[in-house]
Amino acid sequence: MIKLSLHFLLFFVFINTLFAGTTGKLSGKIIEAESKEPLIGVNVIIEGTAFGAATDVNGYFVINNIPPGEYTVAISAVGYQKKRIIKVKISVDFTTKLDEELSSEAITIETVVVEAKSPLIRTDLTSSQTTIDAQQIKNLPVESISQILTLQAGVTQAPDGTIHIRGGRSSEISYTVNGISISNPFDNSASISIATNAIQELSVISGTFNAEYGNAMSGIVNTITREGGNSLTGEISFYSGDHISPRQSTFFNVEDVDPLSNYVAEFTLGGPIPFTGNDASFFFSGRIDDDKGWLYGKREYNIDDHVLINPADPNDIKLKRTGDNAVVEMNPSKEISATSKFTYKPTSTIKINYDAIYSKSDYKIYSQDFKYNPEGTLGYHEQGLLNSVELLVIMNRDC
Image 1 (spheres, rainbow, N blue to C red):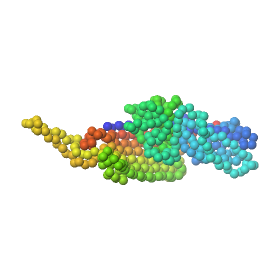
Image 2: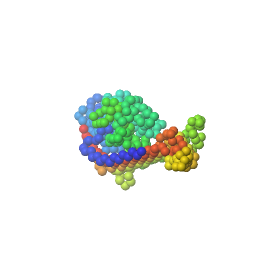
Image 3: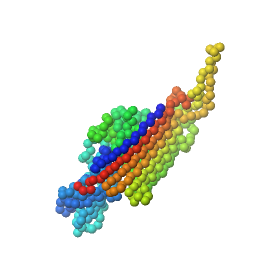
Image 4: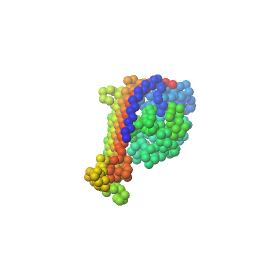
């Protein structure tokens, strides 16, 4: 069985407009510590980015279209102390509140550093939603998006590997990557697979969806991929093992231990593109998961073996048998996934992203009927490719 899906999408997003489900918002109020009066014209800048705003006459500020992640926010005004808020978390489709007080420089001239705290209750949460960022994914003992999903409340995985949210069908889930639908129109499954090391943020919505999400009845899985930063970073990992069991009578050939029977190799590399002055950056990730399986068959017959009947004597029946009695894996799987993202910032208010995501998987499902004819089982092949171009124009530096 071959399942092939190809997505090639070109998106242009103009003036303060972005596809839903890819960015978050930062807002708050800045007041004077002594008088508790709102401060006008205070600069609120997200360090290392072009995002920023100035407070209005009531001390309020709003910064839209911020990619998910953790940031440091600098707050400054003439005649007042400078304040840096670290570990400010921005999540997709959420507004992060940042209400701060500034003291006069006559009291202190040192920069105050404060660590942001996540609110216990989100006032803008109108649905059942869970958000997992890159750091949480790195700390979790998971290897795939499906394993991340099964750790969330209301999400289960059937024996055939399909995901179900709140008891709904697997075809009732909508999958998106960077705001673009990747649902296969044939069965509404995800048409491409993304490695966990390429995810910046993963959100799961399991009820009362916003208007921008269509064709979803049970849940929404939205993935945001990582992009390169201002410094070169990378990571390489490799691990392997094998399946073992004391029940050798049940699991044929399980006593044959191969340290490379199940191995996973992955890497990431990202950072600025040389000679561009941090105006352009890149991010690459790749992952290979090769599992020979743990269920084996014995090749006593081949698929082209057949019965020979003597025309002169119908009772003279012979079987043409060409099997070599070799041990063959009957539930192997191999999955390859790769992502790349190029980011170009020609000006401080314009950002262009190009994303390319590719995945391929080959696997077989064990069948007892073909235990002595292993080549008779079906082979499944899935392949997906997503290309997208995104243009973001930032127009909200002042309120």
